[in-house]
Amino acid sequence: MTKVEAIIRPSQFDKVQEALAQLGIEGMTVSEVRGHGRQKGHTESYRGREYAISLIPKVRIEIVVTDERVEPVIDTILANAATGEIGDGKIFLYKAEDAIRIRNQDRGEIAL
Image (cartoon, rainbow, N blue to C red):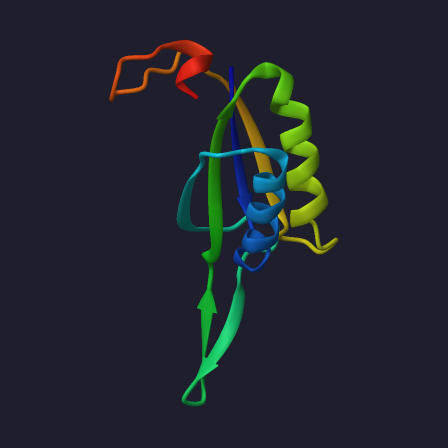
């Protein structure tokens, strides 16, 4: 099993979520996060004064899938989250040793 963690633009989230649902992904954890990469933030004006915004709002999607489904999930996120502009986000992959469903103690892939 692999945990796929994607940090994407909030504006792309609905598109990514819909595409993952069509792929058959039933469960995910979604968090609103803030951060920056190469774009280093931006400036905004409020009441005539400029303010530096160094942390940009993003959405973090976390999904644990069987190893066979990792590449289709990555391809789906890439196809639906990309705008071609700096700040599109990142995908991280982590090995997941085990999964346990709390309700009935199912373990492994069946718990997904």
